[in-house]
Image: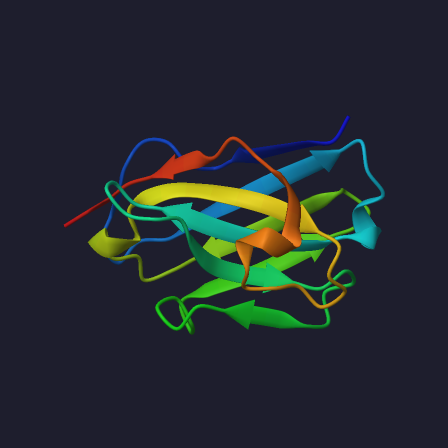
Length: 125
């Protein structure tokens, strides 16, 4: 049974601050999957944030987070990370990690097979 468990959210961080999210995977061969982060703000649809290829060589970012967020992975720990810096109030959302079969990752939600439950990120102004 595949499980993705996000952590690192909860509480509140001030605008301009930093936060690192983690997503621990189990029940799968982690290095066989590209990983992605998505987010959903209140009243909005879930949107792509970042993705990383199976071995970390290729990353994609949404324009809204480019230069501020960094996705990385540790295949030995079956974990993917999202380092978020220069946070803005508009980054407030529930953040989800997902895994999918695309080699290089994808910006499309339909390319992901498994999803975590999400972790809340709140950025105060």
